[in-house]
Image (tube, rainbow, N blue to C red; front, side):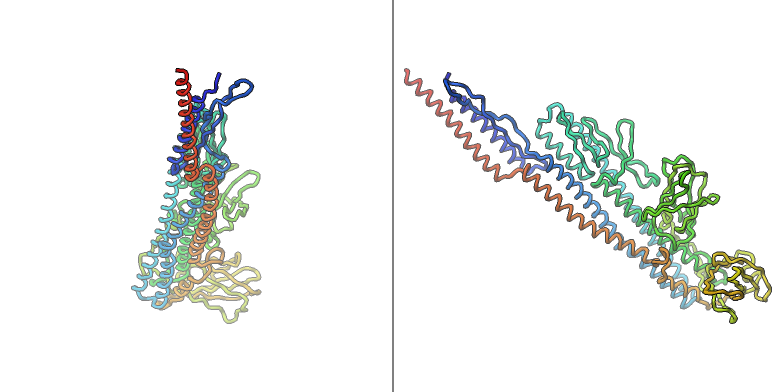
Length: 639
């Protein structure tokens, strides 16, 4: 047996040819997205023994492998998820910030214009032209608030559509990954091109949600989203979808389905685009909408209350300028019932004190052990409510009415006191004479102690005994703060009866006013003269002053500041999101560079390999020609 030089050369040529093929494929795919560099593993053939020595018999390519680092790929997926979430959040917040900067600027401007028009009415209270202009300003303000709410509603719809589009793409990827798993199970995971496609799909999937990859012994990979949802298990794919919002239908929830089973998914645990879209909708858009509703309630309630404190040009107590704050058209969506509730109880919400509202949403729950609990979703503060008849009264400015009760153990509801108000705000006054520019005249008796003061809240001329009917044009209240009682007299000095002061408040003869006391008073008298005078502008003056009065958020903000605070908050969120994008992009780029340094194609390195394997091929071919020459020489020597 002799050394087979020709066979050795043949194996060298074939091995070099394989190396050149792998190198050429790397070069050809240098710009292919998702391609992982491949290397050919070369090994020596089994040696053979000649005499006392072993001689090699050549070489062969034992395997062609992808250069792939699972840890680097996992780091890249995590970076991709974070960057995608940051970019989505910044993109959506930028849109909203732009919306508030352009369309939103009309809201505070129109509020200021309305206050200016009221000031003009105060200057010339009998001018019908100015009064008409003031009503037009009120209508324009209502329209601007309506339009802003419409824009926010469109943002919600657009975000919901994006969520649906993302879930559709996730389902497409899950099906493709299941099919790839089936192919890999057949080939035991040896097909590099399919593995590259699998990794590319998983990387794309990590844009939409956090991805956990579980390698299987069969060569396939199971995929989990957010560590809680098994999206792909072997060759079986789960379907993602959106379900009706709970408790509000226009805020769809995320679901996962396999066979005939459907589970609700917590989007806050997913990350990526899905998590960012849900967070934007639930944590930014909905609160912004609620705060706009708070502004609408503040505008309507403030001016309607001021109307009830004055007289219009016809000498009548002023009627509402805006739709009543508890009108059904102003109260759409204030309460939502969860689908898991076992009772048929339906809730409605009545606003009692606009100034006490915060624009927050609340969770109302009931258990037989703890009773009724109201949790502020913004601050986390929990308060206990007591059911009185069918009403639950909170200290946050609203009352919850329970119909079709009782509420069952474990039932939950979401309460949004200010929801719907911005859409329902409307001017209901049509006659410019209806603006109550004139006010009542309040005179304190000269013999008063000086320890008490009173302020009129509202008047209702439909109540029996209202001044001007049974009492004449004036009514006098004599107050005893020691006994907490009062006595009333008509314009002729005849007694109209006595009453009790409750919580420093008197409500009698259609008049409601508060008492402020700095000491004791047993016979302080105050006379309300309600005789109408056309030139009286005192109530309009008080209306105009409201632009600077802190009426909202428990006396900490003005009407316009409610809107401006929302605008500033969105601007702050947008700036923070921009910073997060820069940070997440840097982290992603670092991970990407690491993957590319290991798995990417380096053209300089491949060019060097190309030259090396070319030389190897040529050298092996030279051995073949040398073997041929030796063989020819051997043949010619024996002829």
